[in-house]
Length: 426
Image 1 (cartoon, rainbow, N blue to C red):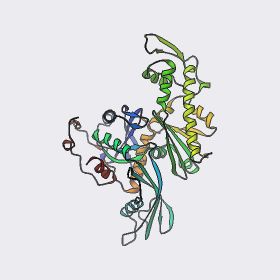
Image 2 (cartoon, rainbow, N blue to C red):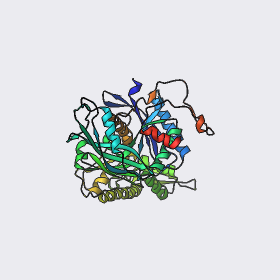
Image 3 (cartoon, rainbow, N blue to C red):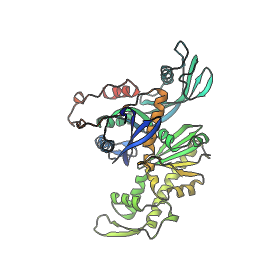
Image 4 (tube, rainbow, N blue to C red):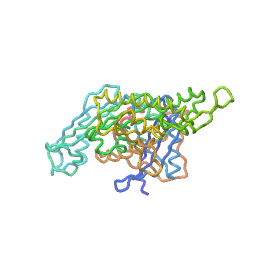
């Protein structure tokens, strides 16, 4: 296995931290390792406790390291939230080489030129996604490298986010002794894996229902046109069960995972279980039908909010239908309820790789695919993400350690990410 062809994604969710290790071989991706850990320090998709988040990231990374037998040094981080904004951009440059052949340098210059726009001081550009390149008036080019031309243009989308939110995420990853090789917009990455080209061309809604929040993204003409976050998710279902069954949050979560059913009409009355009543030593018996009523009501609300966001974006009918993903979509009955409510074609997207065939890994695997494809177009340096296994433990950060005492990181190519680190940490 060549270490220079390993990519690692980091999906920092409210319920779980997911680390996915992928090997790129002949332009195809193979998943070779996964690490998951309970996410502490996150609430509704935002960092509320840096120390707990750092420990959760370390736990997930260490689990993935044990699986692949290598030390993970660099990760591609997914970012999400209502602070994300999309805006169109346009760049124009003259081809520099004497033979007029378009090179990586020309593409880098046209992408950099497209970023010369005025943005508020509290916002930061995290990525530029090319929609098309135009060479001497010839449009709809996806990769112009090697073509002959005089004038190179790029039309794309600039993704900006809140500097504060980005700072907190970078801080957590940096304190977990990891370098960031790239930052990806999570809905865009999830769409790379979950949606077909035809769906994205026709118009489709991707609804990612996580633990703390749900993301509603709309794709049309093969591009992301809108993304919004609803502050409702699987944790709200757990809280409803905890109140309804008068039990602890931990036990309510276990009940949801083991006995939950989201569609009341198909729930089984003979599926019974016992739960401990909070504040006493007694247990109460319930059946799946009783909790299905509570689960269906909350999930119906999440779907209704998603539909409202779609209509606010100006879409009343989507020919590509609805695609569901995210950890909550593992529950039986979620698809049937969505079909009953949306009255449209609905399906659940699950990664088709051994070891990650669960909807909770859609974003993590999508980040790998999207980052690799985007790096090829933009000429970014993502490799290597791991180093050969060694007996020496990873350097641990002392809580009293000052910035000047931190272990030195290996030098890497100056990039937008490196500049962000300079901005926040120097």
